[in-house]
Image (cartoon, rainbow, N blue to C red):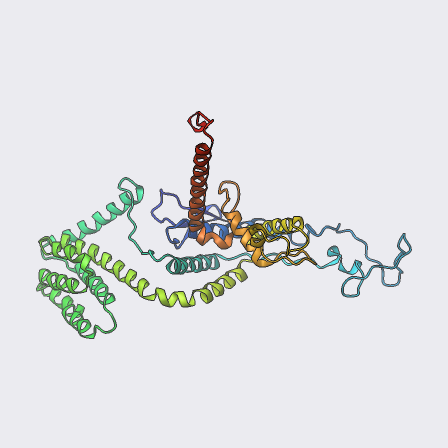
Length: 432
């Protein structure tokens, strides 16, 4: 199966990931949160799945990467192995066996890597989306969900306006017919009822009963069949309930709805304000749950990370390269340091962490410190960011920007101090 992925550009209203199978357009994965972090993380996952689908199975059983030719001859059971040229015995390995038994070329061919199916890929994207949102809620105290606003001249906005206009024009024709057709209006009233009930808290039992009684859909259908449905009366009750449930910032929006007389325009604006109220309720819920999420965020992210790692083996190539480079730099710096740690007490030597003098193996803390310091000098256009830091890439880049500004400010301050202490310098090189 030829499976490839590409991001949907601005020309598509979906804003997610479009799957192409067999050269044609297929299903569309659920969109990730609109942030560069979630998109970059999903791009890394999709890249590894694509490489496995295209060339993973072809590498199995070919001996590539084993370091030995596949035509290595095996001695027959009744034959003696020829003596070594130097006359010595066969060197034993760590387990007491010979080296010939441990040659990679003599091992059975590895099984082909597992290729994710479409459903597994969609499930993985959904798990990454949830992990990204939970991570942002915990670390970003200003995190809020916002409605998607398309640019006025964008294709998404034109498609949205066209569909909405066709929908509400159809409703206007149904209500203007003789006799009126309330089929679509009843469906809208049902959705409004569900939206109001979703805004209630568990303790609002009395208000829940009032909404169920005032918006009894069975009674409304009977009134519509007999031509006795009073839409203005129902909308006035809906506006009163919205005024009780909305946040103070939405009071003006609800009051402006009371001046509308066209039932189609009124229903349209009711849905718009209800969407804003549901967004307010979601942000309130996030703010209420943030302390609880902070207490369990480490366990949750560790569990989800392990699950993703089991599904996507060898998916941390860039992270491995990043840590290997940091470990090599720490080892090189420790080999050049004085042999007695007690003599060297400079801040540079202390920041590299504890290094074992006997084995010269850097500690994990020193490797991580060096790796994070390297991120402050990261060049986005030349290297791939570590996969484990995709969700924090924007924050780390902001720290990098602040660090560069501090360096520029410090350099300018030192230059000014040098100019004041050197009166013989008449011209400032910065003016050239």
